[in-house]
Length: 363
Image 1 (cartoon, rainbow, N blue to C red):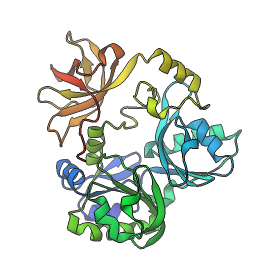
Image 2: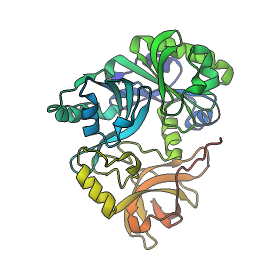
Image 3: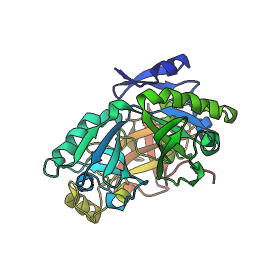
């Protein structure tokens, strides 16, 4: 079991540690509801150093990225990031990822922890005829997600960079918490704003300590993976292994917006046909109309009790106080406001299909 550089810090804070993607990770400190509300209303910090980082460099870097990713990375200028996915050859998704253009010929790919080896093998396979320089730096770097509406104000004293000027999905390489040359990225998977900080493993404890000193007056708290999951689900963000995987296409998963057919990429012809003809099933969002918690794997059934699909992600929303979830159903059943049923033990609980996000962030 791997550990992040902050594992001892989490244990000293009383975190409940669990195995996750081959790492021992903090799932909660005070409890999911408290931690969730901290991020929605204030500022909280996640250690997400288990994520993978690949550097793709050289004159052929963009060619490789364009081949393996669904989005159009040629649109990236230095200082911009892009959400994308890597399609496989059979209509599914190898992984979803964020692509950063760090320099003209240097790109950083941030991938899911559970897929690091699989992703590296997949990208390497397509690099054989291209020849970009590839480096897996996952084991050397740490990643902190400082999230919440108070993140800018709470963290401004730690950097000479004007944090309020960094737009969503943009980043700056600058000083932060006494460390030079860290990536300060206006990204995150919570929907409540904030930053992600990339630094070396030997620097991260200093960054963590300074972040908590600066944030003390703002009620900053450490946040675990359980709240990360409820926060992303309230926004309708897909989680790899739940809502998307090797068998789900980006078209049926609602990721057509990051699938650009203006270029040649892995399996683009088949995916273009699927987009044109329409997928057979679709990832939908639903809210329970009665009390209950829809869990991953629960059956989605019609009024007659016939199974139509499975819940891919589900929880009791801390912000809304009701059961919410995602799942795949036939396109004919996927219209907004349509009533479906979630089989919770022996009861079929009615649920209404809704448009995402579940939680509307206050502007």
